[in-house]
Length: 169
Picture 1 (cartoon, rainbow, N blue to C red):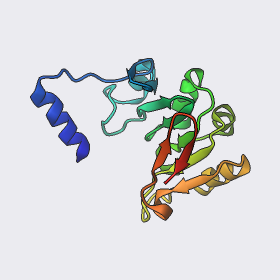
Picture 2 (tube, rainbow, N blue to C red):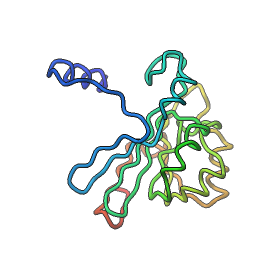
Picture 3 (cartoon, rainbow, N blue to C red):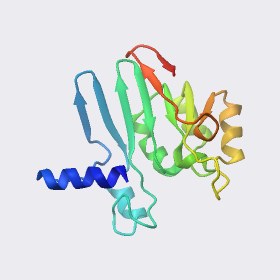
Picture 4 (cartoon, one colour):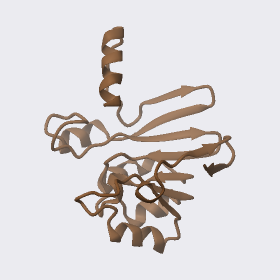
């Protein structure tokens, strides 16, 4: 619903709509958004019409938010193979939004060893038919010692940073 309103505002203002892909970025004041995935090639190879937001897609926008030394990676519904393609652009992150609601296809040990997140957040509904988050994903995060917060258990999760440290509110 919110996305549809945003698209309506963009179109009615005359602003040209464009699709963000790996390598694109926006910087405002001390905050930057770096889009680390998908690449145009990955999107065309995995999505029927080469767009994010269509039925049958595998590509999802992956965004690295940076404010001072605070870094958060938002992964949407990406799969592990897409995230692995983005590792070239990444280093360690403070916060990892776990891909695809914690599905078993979103993370690998290699991804976690590169990102070394200080905390993982799983955005997932309390009653979903997919069984998310997957026990394998929770075990993987637990085995490498990453603390996990889940929206099905905590509700909204707010993380605040001053550009140096961060805390959960």
